Length: 56
Image (cartoon, rainbow, N blue to C red; front, side, top):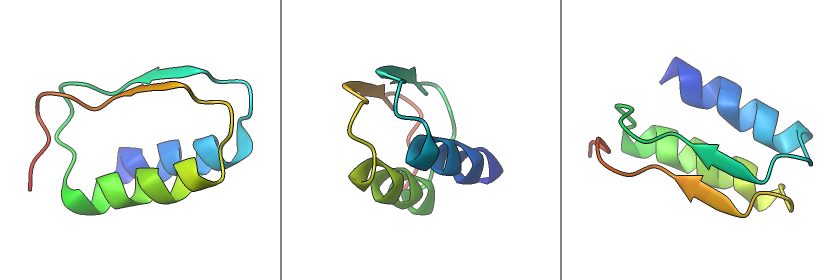
């Protein structure tokens, strides 16, 4: 889950990024929650791909 912590921090600060592809990562529910919390504060991202290897 370490990567989602860093990506979450980046999303809170980066207001230029418009697309993020994180498919084929082993993201668990807690990682998705971290991303969602960060996205709440990010108004620039328009496309997020977390498909395929999402684990519950």
